[in-house]
Length: 328
Image (cartoon, rainbow, N blue to C red; front, top):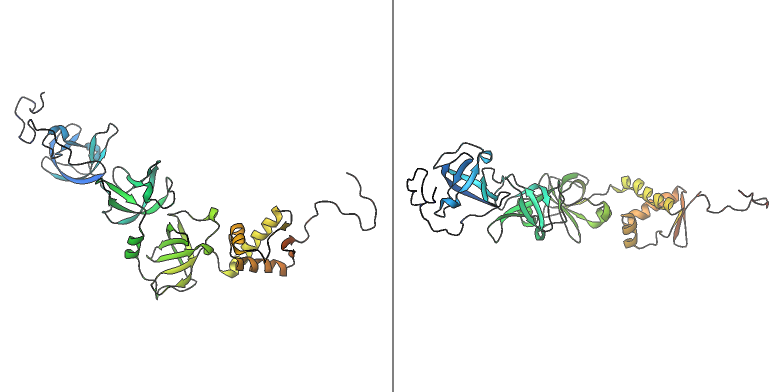
């Protein structure tokens, strides 16, 4: 069959007949409302509005969420099939441009990642728009937008949207309460969390676990409120209250002493930076835990070092009666 003719030799409508090929109006990773031009065995063909049937876009039967007929206007998500052809699906993103949502990471690459927005294909998250390094299976806060090329994309830079969507905690939350939400950003000062109640929560570095144990961006955590700010935001901690933290902090000290055979070059004279790096706690917390162990008589200090009491000696000591040591 010659191009520009129907099956049976009838001329094609002016839209299709002998049209000069033009630049495609639509491209992948976009949402468009197109007209059903014709139906075929594989599905419906949508008018790409170039004037040529050669450019019609297939809406496969498996990509239809409802029956369509010639002349229908159909909202579709456009993407490229494995052969590089522009294809349509009625499974469009479940969020609008400019909206933020928690989205699942479905793939990662050298250039970025792909997040599930409910469309037929994942939407690209450029490397420049990442917060941390999201991994497959993780869920992160992200915003849907159109990039400079006109394609849909997502970014984890959601600070402005979080501020607009947030609620004030004033009069609703008290110090000591707990809030649960997802970490959405880290800065040099600490972490930011968006709670289930839409409160913006700041967790300073000193209130976070050691770096290797810190929650990842997107992870759900529960934090203890330490301060309610006038602007309605909260300061919080992932550490337990002082009384409850005393025991695990003391356990950290005893654990290191055991590993170092009963001695360590850290005491209440050690700098806060070294203590935080080594134990993941503040100097005040370290001094409380160490003081607790000193009071219980489990450790002692000497010359800036801390020693574990009743620790077996590395080398045998001479008997008190002056006798000789038995050889093994």
